[in-house]
Length: 227
Image 1 (tube, rainbow, N blue to C red):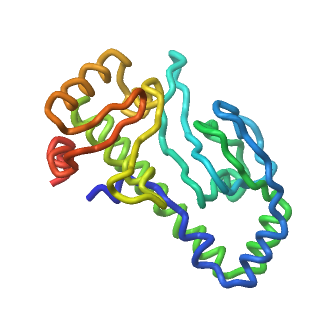
Image 2 (cartoon, one colour):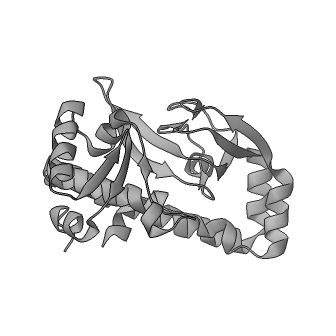
């Protein structure tokens, strides 16, 4: 059930034929981004797409009161920024590194050229766009219909899945600032702190500084109302 709330396009690169992978690699220009550095901002015109080689990136929108609403956390191996290119519109959100990251840039011209030459890449991108739309619809429904406690549990489960890549189940620690987690949940920092405190008292999570480890995924799944 948790999968319908998680956007992940790591399969895009993995499922490409070797020749198509080499075409993409040849166009990539790597850049190091520091924690909290923006990759692109809402309203700007796209010059290309991005591939996250290492690190994590948040995608968010800012409401009329200046509050962030985090939509996704991108993980190593994911592409982002391509919907704006395909729709020929400005970016509809902002992306920012939440830890030091290495991100490859592919220019608009190179990206469109590869799309013309690779039927597989075009098909995978359509699949990814459809998936992104579905996840967005599910998340919007959750924000409007679930309690804050349910949303905190759901957000922790989503992040656990994101941070789980390349590590064992026992060593998954969610390293996200409390402000970012509150912005993902859509609540105030104080409310988040109270719920996390309750979860810790109930032995559902372990807190080590700002890092969080899930101890009882089954109970958190029940709290998130995913059954």
